[in-house]
Structures are given as C-alpha cells and as structure tokens.
Image 1: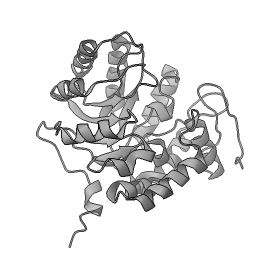
Image 2 (image 1 turned 120 degrees about the vertical axis):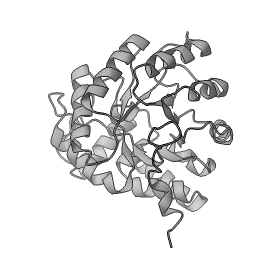
Image 3 (image 1 turned 180 degrees about the vertical axis):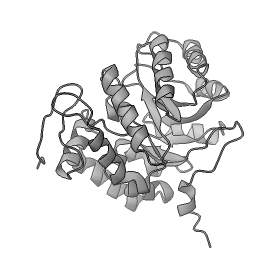
Image 4 (image 1 turned 135 degrees about the vertical axis):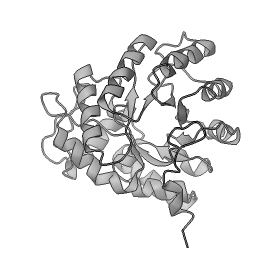
Length: 288
C-alpha cells in the first residue's frame, strides 16, 4: 500500500494549464562563491548532491542565493551550473531586479540557459500600486516562461494583497506562489481561496501553522531538507520544535541567514568558502 504521506512530495504531473505541478520541498540554493567572487561549479554540484534525495526542485539565485546582489555573470554562472548538475530535478531560477524591463531580459536569459521556470517578485520600491503589480506580471508572463510568484516585502518593498494574488493567478503561465509574507493567517487565507496554483510556505517557523500548503521553500532546505519535508508532511509541535531548534542553531532567522548557511556548508565540506556577494565572509576552512 502506498503511504499517503510520502506520496505527497511526488510531482503530480501537469496541471490543467499544461504546466508541471510542483509540490514538496523546493531548495532555494545559496550561491557558492570563491574568494575571487566566481561561482565554483564543483561546489554547486556538491550542494545539489547533498540534498537531491529530499527535494523536488532547485531554486537558485533567489533571496537565499543573494539574487538581488549577484552580478549578471555570477547569476548566469550559478543558474548554468544548477541546470547542468540538476540530474533531472526541475530548476526554477530566481529573478530579483528593480524594474520590469530588467526582469524580462533576465527571464529570457534564464530560458536560454535551460531553466524550467522562474521565481519573480514585484519591481523594487514602495511606489508601485496593486494594478501596477498585475501589469508587471502580465509583462513577465508574456515571455512564455512559467512563473512562480514570490510574495515578499524585504527586498522589493512591496506586498501583494490577497485579491491581487488571485488576479495574477488567473493569468496563464503562473505555476505557484512562494508565500513569504510571514503571516500564517494570510497564508491560510490563500490556501482556503483555492487559487488554482500551489502555495508554498516560505518561513520555517510557520510551517506547522499552515496545514494544507503544497510545499515549503526556505533556506533550511540547504542544510536539513529531510526535516523540512517531515514537518510539511506531518505538521505538529514536536517536529516544529526540531525545526525551530535547527533555525536557531544555524541562524536561519537572522538578517544574514545566507552567510550563516554558507558557514555551516563550509563546516560540512560541501562548499569551499563562505564568501558572499556583499563581500562579507571569506572562510576557506571549516568554520567552528
């Protein structure tokens, strides 16, 4: 007999719009960098190999991958290395750029590199209204590349309202939402709204509060994907306490979480340095 819990993290095949339907744990990969700022492809391969059995897709160059800080060369090399070493896992490239024109150009580059989809936030700056956000996604979707909406405020300065999300999800080409509002009630509202696309929780500390989400996308998946998957499959206080302890141990909820994740990956021998796109960190040996 098939275990209904373990079967939840399988890809369910195409949805009614003809796109792949995603679920389970998607890993928002950190971006390994050497001390000269280049992306070492071997580090990317080791990172993917260290988590591949527990995740359903790979998401390079989003927030955990310092997507808004990477140079175009770093972004290109990270996405290219991820595609080349994915080993059958779908690749959803993050695109975090200030304006719609730049986002569209980067999506076209992502398509040339062979990604399966892209994850896109709003333009940067709090001046954009909800109609402007819808217009942004219309232009983005006109590229023909499947899009996962990234609902966040920390980088873009904008929050997408629930009604606006519903409007966007009706557009052809939308494949899901990375819901990083940080508000469990808002996430539960989206799940209950039956938007027609999967909703992924973006915060480890909220997973047990949002039963019914279709999966999880968060930085802890770089380190403890099996634990993340277990909590998504069986949300409850005991597993949530284990996830919370892991977040505390690795600094997942700190402002420089991507650096702290890199330090742990260095300590495990997965990547070579904890260098970041912002210039902090440079450990070439395991960090205690």
